[in-house]
Amino acid sequence: METGDEAGTVKFEIERSADSPDNFIYMNFKEATGNNSYYSYQDNSVDFGSGRNSELYYYRLKCIEGNGNYTYTNHITVTHTMSGVRSTWRKH
Image 1 (cartoon, rainbow, N blue to C red):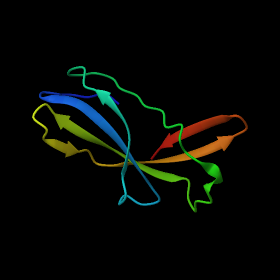
Image 2: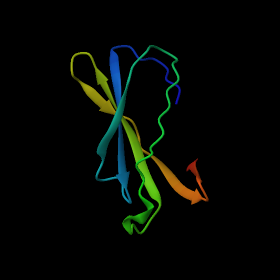
Image 3: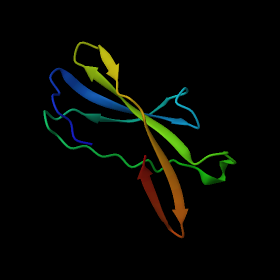
């Protein structure tokens, strides 16, 4: 992801929900580094052996300011597929 204006933002928390955009859980965080920065995160915790009905996941960011205030981004959907020993992600 690339950011624009990060004024006041100190970190981004990455959250994920499985199957619906209703039950987000904390996954990790990235410290804010300044305007127009690039960030990436690879979710290696997806479990194909769990018997889930879908390979669809929802992700969003919690943008936290230095004073403790925060906002959420809109969520994105991602499908995870496994092919041999290589996993691939496709953003919708």
